[in-house]
Length: 174
Ligand code: PNS
Image (cartoon, rainbow, N blue to C red; front, side):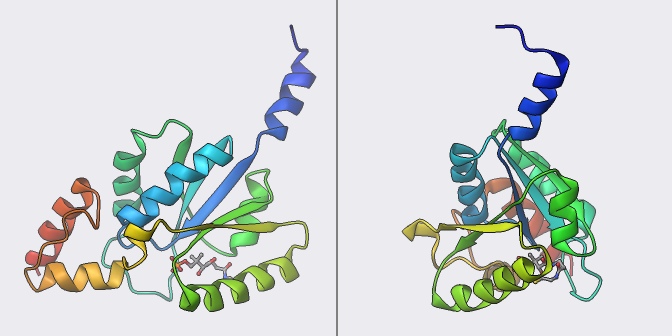
């Protein structure tokens, strides 16, 4: 069936795009798992790396984006961008209303529910959708992973190999 340009445009707009925001300092195996599973639910997942000026990151925005670029080579329906300012404005600018977040435990839930409700108050048409972590990733936290590498421990399996390499390079140079 041949669709008119307008219909095709409409179709593109109807694509289910999910924005997966986070600090990702650095991306872990758990984050990657959420993106993979997200692309099985949504037509496209945009990983949105936060450029917050109030948080102190180990990796610069460009480095975090570059790490994701490498990881997403194997996931065709996912791509990465960075964003600054309010998440809800960024999500709207992408022509979607879906924010995707991963959940590991009750501590995450308390933080997430506050963010989801605040984002909903700011832009009522937006929805936050949660994917529960797979058991193997429930203990992973970027902060702990950095500490382990800094103290010479092994993080194989906790982060993708590309990230492990960069973490070692960065932390051991310190
Ligand atoms: O990986 P993180 O640190 O839990 O991600 C938090 C993030 C980046 C999603 C959140 O801090 C955020 O949305 N920042 C953008 C600024 C904003 O919109 N703040 C209001 C959130 S309710």
